[in-house]
Length: 627
Image (tube, rainbow, N blue to C red):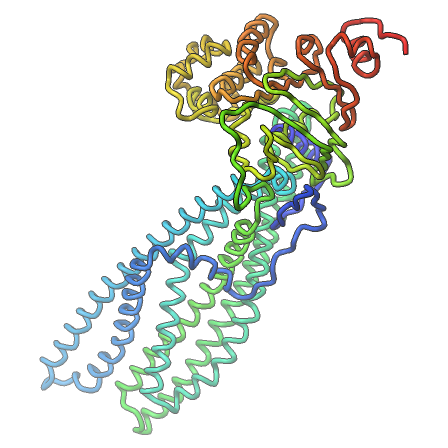
């Protein structure tokens, strides 16, 4: 199912179809979701989205408190330096006060040491918090993604999700590890510096405050533009990642159709879009920084000219002017630093917003508040009553239409029909990857919509046509069927699936890495791995989707014997295009365009004519009965 979904995306890509990005609302129980119903990003302002990170900081209150203590201590120590300089200038520069000046310098050295310790403590605490919170955030996001149903991944590109999981969380980490603490430090220095300016010279401080609105206005107005353009740059980067992920995922199709040039030009266009968005963001931030620094330092120079006149007139001491100058520089530097850090915080706020949008998606397939337990022992009794299914991307097209079906415990039922008839869609419903648009599905008498999806899926073992192999070892891939299985149980399942021999032939045997998507294995070997997983799972219901399609004749015969032994005491549903593999089924269901058009044994369906007889004629050269 998953690989067919990837194939659909690859076809959309080759057709230059665009996939929307952004947060997606949960698919309603009907299973219908129109692409124009995808919610747009919320119009949150400023850096308020960073407040969403507070719950992640809550478990580490002690470290947060310690960082705050270091931060406040560093700010107070920095604010104490100009006072010492004033006293040294006004009272220390004479031979009679040589001892006093030594004390002032010693005090400044002590302050510098304490300031270094406090700054180092702040840096370590906030860096630790950034690493810890982002690790927790990534865990929660990935865990949340695992709960979302396939309907969500039909409309959200994998590249966009990976961008949020990596690039966006990195921006948040930067904000927590440095930008936020730097901003708080500069806010404290700014407020403390203004307070000390007021104590030093109220008149000159009044002139400074007159310049504050002139400085703050561009910070606010351009800050909003920085945030908008930061989010736009992040979205363009996510789109380029999506193109790259889809292209590399379907590299064989791209090369087979000689579409390397098209892929390269499409990715280059996406990268250029990222560059343009990033350049716009950088231009806005540069303009913001230039305006703030120019305005701040121009204001400071003007105020200092007034102070110099006061010293010449005897209304202010040289030490007081020096103190005022140091605090003014501190305020100016803090404001200039805030203008730069503010842009980084705006960028991190955009990332936090995208992450929050992702975490706010509610899984469309989830356990009810009070799930009904499935009966024990399991029987494998399946019932479908009036079941329809429409996929989210095709809400007006029924993949299944009015299916009424009962599969008795231990029965082997084959599903046949042309491609697109709804066979794999039926498997997707049984595994509850989707909920039916209409109708009820029961497993051992329990409506699966009222049961826990994980409990429902434990009753099934799937062998898909397109086997998913992960980049771990052969043992890891086999244990996907039952992680707690012993090494001997894994070997027994592999032997039953005729996989043990080729696994032992690998360089490290069962400890051999199979490569991404199992590139080190042939199609038949991957399929035997999938069969071994199903044998190991030992579930009451088997779902076999073209389980032997990639095997040679000899291997197919051996695996068919293993599956025959496994199927004896289990309910089995088999999808097969080769009718020779389903002739021994207890019952054959014929699907066409989502409808169940006929059912019976092989002989009964041949005698009845219709679609099955036509398929048999095409495959076996049999003469279909006259109607």
